[in-house]
Amino acid sequence: MAENKHTLSDLYQMQSLSLDSKISMTRRRIQGWIDEFGEDGVYVSFSGGKDSTVLLHLVRQDYPNIKAVFIDTGLEYPEIRQFVRTFSNVDILIPKMNFRQVIEKYGYPFISKEVSETVDYARRYVKALEAWKKENEPIPESKMPYDPQMADLLGIERRANKENPEYQNLKNGIMPKENVRYQILCGTFRHKEKGEQTDEISKMYNKSKYKFFLDAPFEISSMCCKVMKNQPIKEYAKKNNRKPITAQMACESKLRTQHWIINGCNGFEMKSPISNPMAFWTEQDILQYISANRELLIDWRIREIEKLHGCPISEIIDTKTGLPAFPVDSLTPIASVYGDIVVDYASCGQIPGQIDFSDMGYLENERSLKTTGCSRTGCMFCGYGCHLEKSPNRFEKMKITHPKQYDYIMRGGHWRKYRIFNFKGEEISLRHCTHEQIERWAENNRENIRFKIEKEDFYLDGTGLGYKEVIDWINENGGMGILY
Ligand code: SF4
Image 1 (cartoon, rainbow, N blue to C red):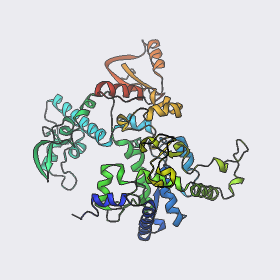
Image 2: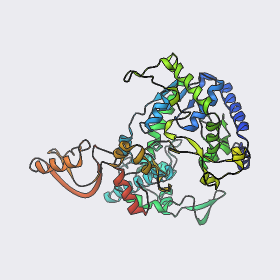
Image 3: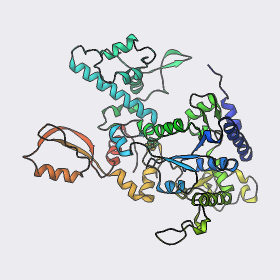
């Protein structure tokens, strides 16, 4: 096994460097990456957020024509999508499915990637197990549904050795009593110490508090990121033979820290090489950079807009209004959805107006900064991590800043008491109707259709994404207090 590139103390040491030192180190890493793959062999992963805007600014200072790539999932803030479209040389990728199709086919992205994946696979396992038990007959060879997924779920090798007896057993419906993910979900997975199983129940893998999701009347799943982001970017990188430069920072998660310790900033030896030249930056570095380079960033945006339109910015006219499309005094250094960058007096322990050393010119860079608008601009509708946020959380803020989008995601979920079938026994799809239309239609067509009263279940009508019902159910059954 290859040795780790760094240690955790390397990270702390690098994180404590001055912003100027970090900028120089980042530029050297970018240069190293481009020396290896060439300008045409790389791209900047550009989400339109503040981190990747800083990255693009740094890269384009030395390589003005470097390609940037944006994935338009339809889930970004409208201000972010607009902002991205003011930069030159950006390839925009559109996923094959939209968010609604993803949640209908796979499930909602709630709690976290790990939890939603665990729940998703555990549910498939349980379903398959129940179906098999119901049959009570030996299952004909290869007829067991989900056998490849089940094998992956259980960690049973099926690719290199298709004849693996454990995999063959699975195909014939013979399953181990308890699989690892199910144990994780039930909190019975035993902790491993240096590869050896101990008697201790693992806390890290204990997802038992999310066991209630097994009975959820809707699915939760980690497929959303795969379909909306990973697939389009993978296809793009393969087709164009380009390697990514991203603004990922180790401080964002344990997993990213781990990746940095193993691979360093430039993962040349990785199976899918990736450069994270700002891995040792912190959130505060990003805000300090934007605050210190405000004018420079605005000048750069003007040059980008002019490059994109091929004329001076003053000559670009909005065809609807007949007025300048980009009034220079309205340009912001980063997407407008962030608002302004201001001193975070509360986190400095200072009362606004109170004088401290920073006001006297000392320790200027020691002050904590914050944005007055959104602090994060990932996918607007993502439910990951919302259960950990204090009020006002993302949904409460969205209700005020983006009421249309808020209304759309909250509406549309219903508990149905019946499903409607035609005379051939085929279910009639109701997803393009409102709940009220369905009720009315069912009433008026009592003689022409067949009703089937089933256990009450959850469905979406065509008007929204049903978050209100989903969050209510999670709060009620999981004892969570997600606000909206
Ligand atoms: S961040 Fe959330 S909403 Fe966005 S693609 Fe990933 S799972 Fe989906």
